[in-house]
Image 1 (cartoon, helix red, strand yellow):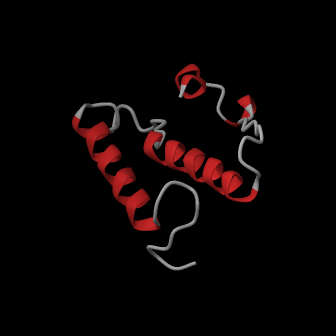
Image 2 (cartoon, helix red, strand yellow):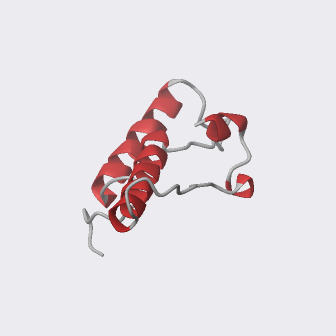
Image 3 (cartoon, rainbow, N blue to C red):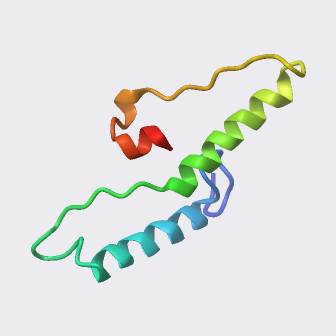
Length: 86
């Protein structure tokens, strides 16, 4: 898969990189990341939502209309309350 290709995980490589770069810049500007705070955890909410929508669409494309499908994410993957709410 080349740079800029769609991969079902929240947009193209370029889109994800742009969101990441913007988030890191904002974290530095807000003082959340810097010499005194060298570590920060950032989540790509847009990417998470896009990946979930892509997953839902993929199942809808191959199941009969009205077929119940439960999509679930493992809490172990990210047990943070804001992520679970998302």
